[in-house]
Image (cartoon, rainbow, N blue to C red; front, side):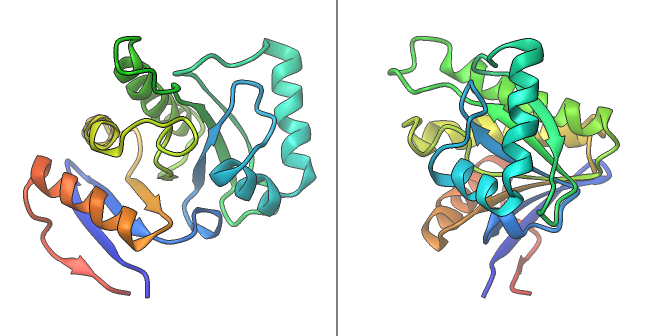
Length: 192
C-alpha cells in the first residue's frame, strides 16, 4: 500500500509519497546523479536500468557537449522507457561535515530541477532524497532544505506538483515528520 501526504502552496501541491520513483506517473523524475552522469548505484542505477541504454547515451552526449556537472547543477534528458517523459539529472553535494557550502549546493540542485521543469513545460516532478544515500547527507539536515526549496518553487509556479518519492516506509515517515514540523500537519494522509 502506497502512502502519501500533501500540502498546498499557492496553486501547487507538495507531496511526500512512498513508492518506486521509476514508476512515477509525473511528467518528469529527478535522478540523484553523479557529476559524469554515468549511472551508478541506488536511485541512479534503478533509473538507468528502467529507462534503458538510450538514457546513458543521452547523458554521455551532455557530458561531451558541456563537460561534467558540478554539485548543485542539473541537466535534462528524455525518459525513454520510463513512464515519465523526462529525467532531470541533479548532482547533489557529498556531505563533508557541513562547512563546505553543502546546504547551498543541495538547495541549488533542487532549484535547478524546478527551473528545468518550468523551462521544458513539465507540470509535475518527482524527486528522490538527493545526496541522502551514498553521498551521506544527513536526512534531518537535507529534508528541510529540500522541502523549503520545493515549497518556494511551487509558490513561484515553476511546477504544479512537486513530489518527494521515497522508497521505504521508514524514509516516508521521516520526511513526513520533518515536513509536518516545518509546514504544520497536512490536511489529510491519503492511502490510495
